[in-house]
Length: 231
Image (tube, rainbow, N blue to C red; front, side):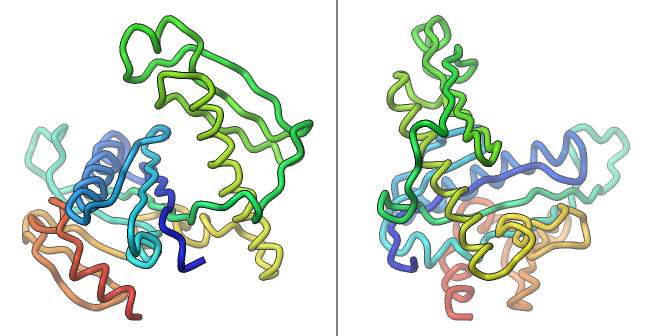
C-alpha cells in the first residue's frame, strides 16, 4: 500500500462549535497548499474531503491522521479570550479495482441537485450523487463535478476506500475502524499536534518538536512530514 500515488483526506470539525468548523477549513487549505507546493494534484471530491495524487503522497501524508488541536482567539470571540478547538483528519489510501469487489446489486443511487460550486448547470440539474451501500449502510455523497457520471465514479471510489478500511480492520481483529483509531472522539486531549497561535508555534506531540506556525499553516510541511515518515 505504501506505493500508492494517491490518497483521500477527510477533515471534520470536532470539539469547539463554530470555531472547529473554521479550523477544519483552515486545515483543508493547509493541505491544499502543501499539495500545490509539492506539485501534487489536489481536488475537493466532497465536503472537506480531498483527493491528492502525486509522488510519495501516501508516505508523506499517512501520519497526518488524528486530532489537530488549535489554540487561538476565534473570529467569533468578543473579549479576546483564547479558545481551544479541534478538527480530525483521516488519511486513507486510494484503492484499486482489484483490491475491492463491489456487487452492483448492493448499490442504491439517488441523483440530487448540487448546492455546491459549479455554476447554474450544477444547481439546476440533478448532477450530485448519493450512493448507499445496502449491506453496510454506508452513504456517500459526491457533488464536486459538473456531470452525474463523474460524481458517480467518485462516490464509488470513496466507497471502495471505506470498504477496504473495514476489511483491514477485520484482518487485524480490530473492533473500531481505522478512522476511529486515527481520530478518536475528537476531544481536546486526544491530539497529535497543537497549533498555538499566540506563541506562533506548532507542536507535533509524536516528534516532540516545535515548528513555526506561520510556515505550517501556509502549507510548508516538508520538514515535518519527512520526519514523521522516518518514524
